[in-house]
Length: 170
Image 1: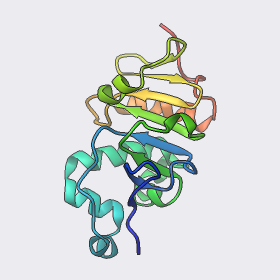
Image 2: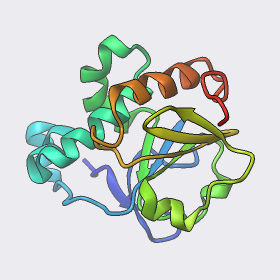
Image 3: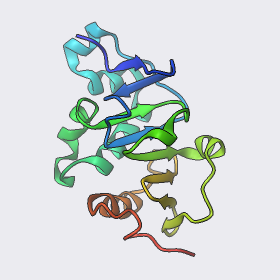
Image 4: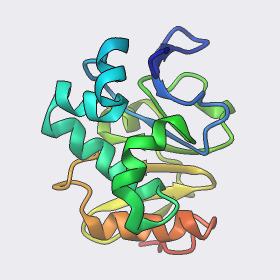
């Protein structure tokens, strides 16, 4: 059984499905401590990831699951399965311009590497994300920066396949 953490074509670490085939790709600034194959076989990949990295990574994968679950009520089950279905997590902005899925640039550090285009729409009020085409620049995946109200607004847009539909401009 191979782990879900591998090196992609550009030698950068990644988790989940191949980013080129993923419906959702999350670009984060730092990789976590990764499960070994033995850990993964005993507990499952995401539960082991959470066990190794604590509450911080539980919050990250929970927000990702809430954004990408086919049905919001099933996000808990989806959280433990999403990396084997259609979600990729990468830790480098390299080659993201070639991806066809929805790409989330997470946090200020990543936004500094891939600036928000002027034409991006603002989604949210107090906590905001920027959206253009299949690209989303969002706050770090922590409930203080990415509250459920923003999750709900982005999720509505994502599920409607019209990312701009729930967003507004300032």
